Image (cartoon, rainbow, N blue to C red; front, side, top):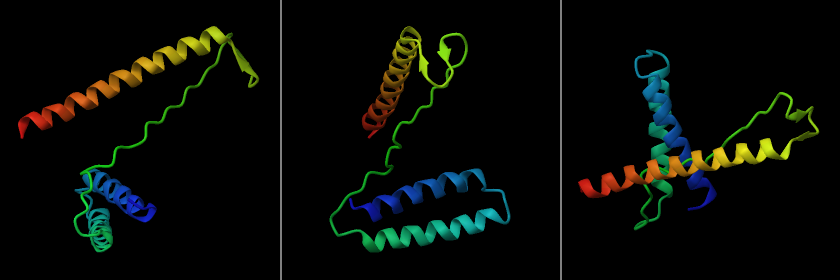
Length: 112
């Protein structure tokens, strides 16, 4: 997949999510539907024959961790024990999310 195709596929997914949120809005919903149709048309025109795209491009995981209190020294540093503990919990959260995502994938495979 080239950068333009990736951008269009991501835009299609984002527009679908926005349309779900605004489905009852009389002004926004038609505009989003029009943009979604145009994006799909452009994406279809760029797709080479025989290429299969996954139904959804997974979002890259992102996280922001904010610290404050006595274990943080302004913007200059964080005590190593606190940072290590936060990273351990973040890693556990990430593993749990990956296991949840994969269990959903296997449920879909087993249903077919």
